[in-house]
Image (cartoon, rainbow, N blue to C red; front, side, top):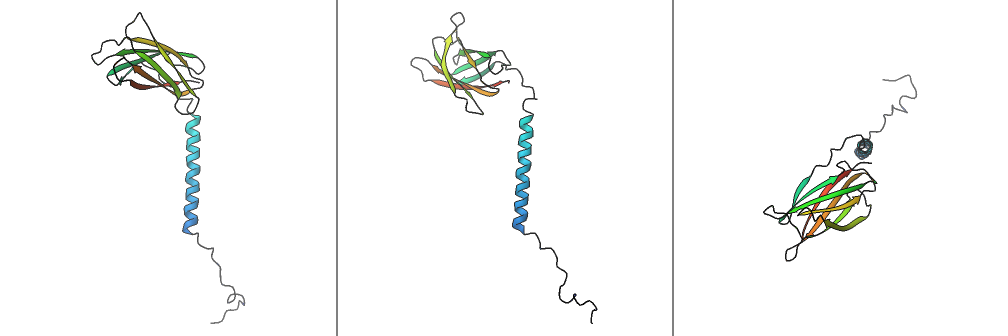
Length: 165
């Protein structure tokens, strides 16, 4: 059968080349990374909008000791001093007096340096110790306390404190 179109037999219709599987995977990976970046940006931009509950006194074990941390103010702000009060007790829940207590204070999510120092005993209240720390920026901070009693192994525990901007 003859056609009247002289070009029909010379240039058949050309279809677009199929998208290769490798190219398809690359496009999907780029889209996934883009979506992840948008999600991270959105969650970070909302971080300051969500309320943070006030810090409630928290008790944790440190070796054979029990350590309770209370802070004032209960909703600390960056740049303002934070009074940390520790109540120490032994395994029988008796106040632990005569301990040497030291601390480290670091930001959890970013390297803002490390503050270290001694936690002073409150002589009027057996087993009570206090210190003051300051957070240079908002976010989660970690207060790690080390308890040393003569002739006993040292004990350590950490508390996370959320600081507002």
